[in-house]
Image (cartoon, rainbow, N blue to C red):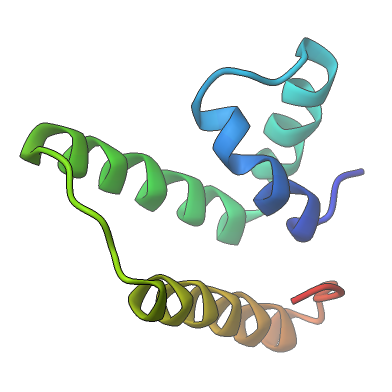
Length: 89
């Protein structure tokens, strides 16, 4: 079964519909059982929709790094509370 780290590594391609069917099924199966990854997927999808509808702009590397760090912290905290696997986070 895919880990949260695996899902996050494939999330961009998943959102762009660029995954092979077998890999897509693995990501989807993980998200059926993982509320955290489902939330990351949903918020990322919604954010992309907002950004796309708003026109394009670039985030600074600093902002991008802070956002990624914060997401990882939230996932670690969630898994620490539920005893889940946080390897790679």
